[in-house]
Image 1 (cartoon, one colour):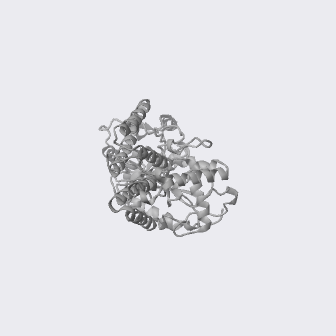
Image 2 (tube, one colour; image 1 turned 135 degrees about the horizontal axis):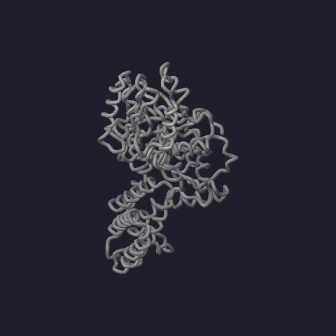
Image 3 (tube, one colour; image 1 turned 120 degrees about the vertical axis):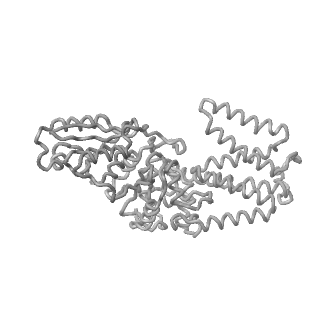
Length: 486
């Protein structure tokens, strides 16, 4: 953060200019510009960073200054410039040279005028950006095709376009001693719980680090803590409509400049399993899709460990269901097959991420042959294992939040190991410990498994089934919003 008691702007023009040149590295960095001008008989200097400013706006500002005549700035020059000559929408002043340096690095233009003990800050920023496009991980059949981009001000605009409530607050903050990354905390003041808002703001203001190299993920680690817990305590989204829905429910959003991902806080386990596609279909269709997704997520966690239990204890299965177990004795121990195929699937996933799109089809073919046909032919994997692993993998990919799918995968591996070491009691104990672990988790003091634990029948029904929007007349009571009714 900028020192509020730093070097002050004085009437010594040369001293001000030299300080800014030294701090910004003028002459050492090719993109830091200090344009020296002389209008109305006064020396002036514009400080800016090439590539972060709009050249057309700077040219327009210089045209305004060029119209000044000798003597125009003799009486109250600051007021004359601010209210008459520099007719620009976003313009302000500051008497702190360190803050002037900060604004230049943020992309603004700073004007220093001889005889004026204030720095004039002109917001003529134009960050490099891409056009809003539909996010790859949150696609819908029907619906909006715009998505957040890497420029924070664009993302806040996309959100305001959908929520035009005058009580929507966009609070600017800066994080990082060196990066000075722009961060925005967004909430609807008439709805959001003020205690949650204050807790989030305080957590961000206390961050003391050089920078946020991984943008929202670095910020989330500082806010959430619990670094060895694989489950996400916030929800991530790249869709403006999803962000708007959560704002209206009473959640708080955090935008980080340089990232197209927005953090939604607080968030529960069930909240992270919902998808916008369910609300783009009729309620009964949306309910069906939601139940299918829940079953797929359950299968991704419990199916493989349960199949291992039945395979190693076939006497537990009734005779008609013997087909679930192996048809022949495996050449490789089942637990080795399970762990190795889990590692293999993750290796294929990582290879897919790093493979150019043109080669993705070839990679898929190689993975199919190696893990499928050849691995089964040589006896490395059992055919039944490939089947149940495929079902579990589909459940993993059906999980809307990628971070949650990774946490569920680790839980699956943990249950497999518990089942291997302790048998049937191990499966039961592992499942119980996982449930207790998640029950004790909190996201900004909200139980992670709410409304299942603690149980709330009305809200649990809303979780299991997609309730028609006209019938949703209240906000989640666990958020303790100012206005509980929609």
